[in-house]
Image 1 (cartoon, helix red, strand yellow):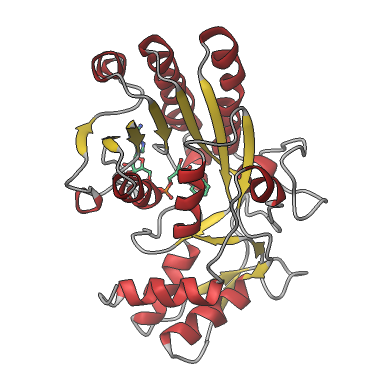
Image 2 (tube, rainbow, N blue to C red; image 1 turned 90 degrees about the vertical axis):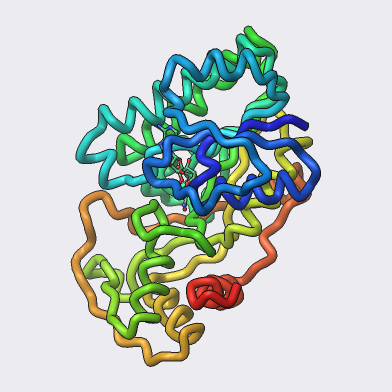
Length: 310
Ligand SMILES: NC(=O)c1ccc[n+]([C@@H]2O[C@H](COP(=O)([O-])OP(=O)(O)OC[C@H]3O[C@@H](n4cnc5c(N)ncnc54)[C@H](O)[C@@H]3O)[C@@H](O)[C@H]2O)c1
């Protein structure tokens, strides 16, 4: 297949590009390199340096006739979206709509939209949270991811564009930079490898820290491979359903590095969710997908990569 991967110079997108190429697909990356890195670019993929909100995206798609668009490009920082909601709307709202309009005009067959479980659901009673839960986003980033998802049925009905949504939990692994949504794993790994302490942000009534669902990037990549063929017109949580406190994560990383855990503690940052955990039974059933890499194994592999061994 001829596939466009937006955000293919970023952490997750670059792994998806590698896997699509390894599966024999022809891949073009569109990325503005705002947080992505040239060294993540797979040399076997074509590269277009462009903002997804750029009007020239329509010319590119009209000329290239991609069969599939996989949309990973995004402003990915929740705090930045709170500081500058209009900039987030430009990248994550208008950028996504621009790409959808271009895809519809160019006759793209399938659109894989990358969304966020944690940011869309917000604080929920029902954990692990299934896809049919009413979203309660608590950040402009979450609102704009939901906006992107909400356009898809219109483009399917009016333009015949097939779609799949993958709502990620907290993704971690090699190439992750500490700025991103789930940067905590990258932050802990880098700090502990450098012999430094890292801070666990926590609410007073949660001494172990927040609860999160950490999913290894290789598992996320397999969901993107499955989404090329399966799950049309559906939303899927991509996580593990396994709850992990920040303190447990700290201990797991410390063990993988081989140091004593000596965390500092600090108050929660504005907008920090207390709990986020995804029910992944729909993806198991419909995508024939399940997470395979445990947190301990994923942290070991991430540390090995940071040490230059992987
Ligand atoms: N990391 C996570 O835990 C997580 C969780 C939920 C959802 N996601 C989503 O996964 C996707 C990839 O995130 P990531 O963690 O790999 O972050 P990342 O910052 O490494 O990747 C984002 C990529 O998009 C590019 N980009 C940003 N704005 C752009 C624009 N306007 N035009 C073109 N390119 C642009 C960046 O240069 C970068 O290469 C994003 O859509 C993000 O919202 C990530």
